[in-house]
Image (cartoon, rainbow, N blue to C red; front, side, top):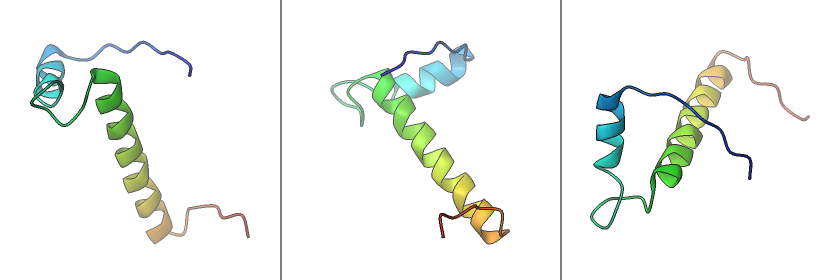
Length: 58
């Protein structure tokens, strides 16, 4: 799996960390970020589909 590096504001990182760890929803930051990216892409696909901008393999 490729690795990337991103810079994010401390406030956003603190919020992310609230969801990571033993009491959180995610095991680590990478899992949380991957899930967030997937969810955001799903939302963007839904928007594109509503506006007939989503390409299909038909």
